Image 1 (spheres, helix red, strand yellow):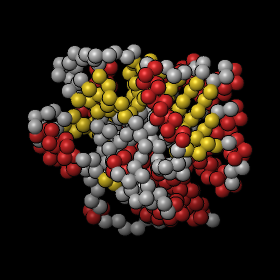
Image 2 (cartoon, helix red, strand yellow):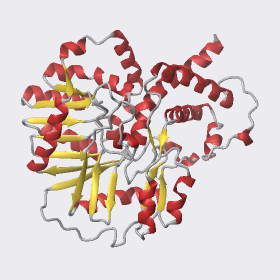
Image 3 (cartoon, one colour):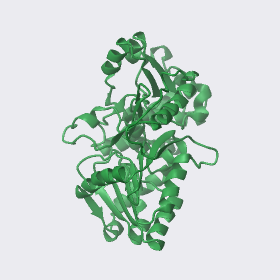
Image 4 (cartoon, helix red, strand yellow):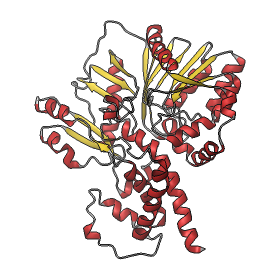
Length: 440
């Protein structure tokens, strides 16, 4: 019985972590644009969930157990382990508590077997042309991007820095990742949105169309704030302050739109600026709320705010989320578990059918628009570094609403009665999601 217990707990833990890593890591690997450029997952295992959910985590636990003490130790030839991040070996040997971190890393490793690289050739060409290229790579988001991958870029004058690299002294911050997606050119033009740099944004993968996403071009004064957001992560990753005038030139635009850049990082009280922005706009809505998000896991407070808007102010709330094409089955089922209160109060929820919908937009009353990297979940609201652009402009809101209506036309609306008839298997899957809901 003791042996069963020794294996049962890690196996259950590994299955849960592995399923969570499907979307959590895919997000962090897939949502890496320019400012968080890295390698991303095509997830070849997502269509074989029985193998991906049980067999691989079981093998992971057994292998990790033999190596790091969950099972009877066997001789290990440490000299034969050729891992680029060798610090992880010593961390994993430190004790049982850190073995949990190692289990997560193993789960991540199995989920990124289908990695593809960013098109480094583009950055290499502009670097050779004399353009200063600065890249911040998240250490989890670019987990398998070894130093050799960027060697030519660095040799051409490009600079590459890692955000929260794997070191023993960074373990307390390992759960804080940068999820910001920014691309800034000459300090004068910025791009912000949800798209990452990976083949599944550019081409169909097998029978799955390329992902649906939205990016926005920014000019004018707001670009300096986007650049400052990049500079914040650059300072933390490299220790250098980007203060040269070339990074912050005077920016002018023919047509100015009232806007503000809202960047956010984890705080002790967990009330990040991104969370305040979203909650404030939800509370101020008088007519309509349009939400498009790939990961919809609103906490009790956000759900209550939306229910109040529906019942007390008659606000029409419509939400577009991924359907069965979601890149993360566990997050989708965790999300569906939370539909009840909103559907009962009159919200309309659409599940996008053609492919994975990765867009992140919010439109309030046809006037306020929010675009950027923030998902509607706790990881974006409380754990990750994020950045959003909020604009008060009816034309922009109308343009985003056009995309929203097209998405609705290609989606399946979920009724309250249909939601109540969820199968016992789906409900059981939701219970797994509850364990890691605040990490998804």
